[in-house]
Figure 1 (cartoon, rainbow, N blue to C red):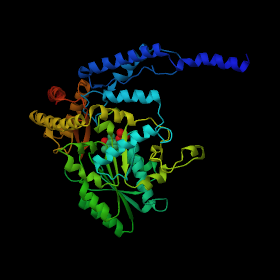
Figure 2 (cartoon, helix red, strand yellow):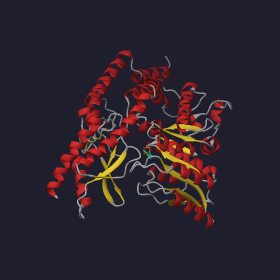
Figure 3 (tube, protein in one colour):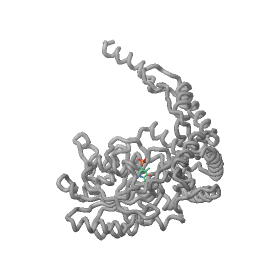
Figure 4 (cartoon, helix red, strand yellow):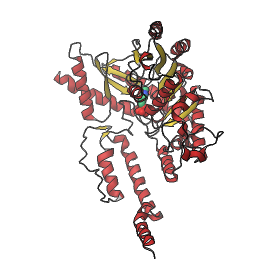
Amino acid sequence: MSELKETIIALQAQSKALEPDESVRNNYVSKVHDYANQFLNSLSHAPAYNSSNETQGIFQVNGNKKSITEILDIYTAEVAQKGINAASGSHLGYIPGGGIYTSALADYIADVTNEYAGMYYASPGAVAMENELLNWLKSIFGFPESAIGNLTSGGSIANLIALAAARDKYSVTAQRIPKSVIYVSNQVHHCINKALRIIGLVEVIVRHVDLDEASRINPDDLEQKVKSDLANGLFPFLVIASAGTTDTGAIDPLEPIAKIAKAYNLWYHIDAAYGGFFVLTEEKRTLLKGMALADSLVVDPHKGLFLPYGIGAVLVKDKEAVYHSNHYRANYMQDTLNDDSPINPADVSPELTKHFRGFRMWLPLQLHGIEPFVACLREKLLLAAYFRAELLKLGFMLGPEPDLTVSYFWYSTGNDQENEFNEHLMKEIHNDGEVFLSSTKISGKFVIRIAVLSFRTKLETIDRAIKMIDKALTKVKAVF
Ligand SMILES: *Cc1c(COP(=O)(O)O)cnc(C)c1O
């Protein structure tokens, strides 16, 4: 045999470990399956937060092999049991995550089959499925069929795609940047600021519109600011509203802002990463229907549809504006050219090769239908109301009636130690860890947030949270 062939055969013997045979696969799957069951079965009594954050350098990659059992043990001790347990229903901080199990099954199949979901040519099935999901999103958010969209890794990239489209629609290029104006609330998500930097708009003028007492954009102030900027020869081109801010869950007045955007020819972007899917509930449909008036909209199925982390979505009405930055034809892709093929995800996103993330959304919607998702969203709205009612009984002060499921509370000490008192209370709650809450500052006041969005948060979770908060309150009162 030639030396070349011998070497290839020797390498084959080594590389075949990458293709485990069926019995080895079965062993892996059964271990992983056992692990998943154990994890899920222990979730209801596992702490939502573990403040220990040392990781013993155990993740070092050095070529030493470990068994699947050792790997799962490391995962349990060093990953799953540290920090915030994002799969837990007792996670009531920031914006809680989801993680419905049936999505994981879809991810498994998407990974095993390794569908190429960037181009229709490569996987007409995967791309058609993602496009149907986007059609469904257009229908529930009142976007026209002609709108374009993309399933992204999350809300941040979705916002980036939308803002780049706004920039290109209005030709905000170098010369124009210093005179171009964007209108936002100071409650806007920080990924908007990141996106503006990434897309080269760090030098645009950003106006912070006045807010009302519930932290919503004041449309009159918006209009005043636009008018005055126009009078001063500036170039207003973009207004950004939130449908569910991170701090307080506030929904900006979507329809009045739409009117102003239309009257002054501004691109209207709505970041509904947190709140968008509440449009599916009868309770919030009216409040959120103004989303249909946006030029671009961002939602996050890994929040409002309870999917595991790694899926956001953007819808944009003007296809050409999105294509300007994302549609590109390289010579080595000439085989993929076909003018009447459906929209390619790669033409709507900075990503070319990407995870086939549509399946993790499609499979649960097909398997369970839409009804349980809507029921779950309604349940969250009512749980947030219940949480507030119980906090009131404990003597806490509450933030304004929430638009959705994020709210805040604080304990009033009636003296200048109020912030310190509530900071202590937050620490005490974190040390306990049974239920996880986070804090924020509202007009300089330290407040504790409640955010109900995990599909696993139940009545019983809120009762436990209340007990834990009561216990922490007693402790802090004893030292103040
Ligand atoms: C979560 C969130 C984002 C960021 O989305 P990621 O999925 O974390 O990238 C943006 N805006 C709002 C309002 C959010 O709640």
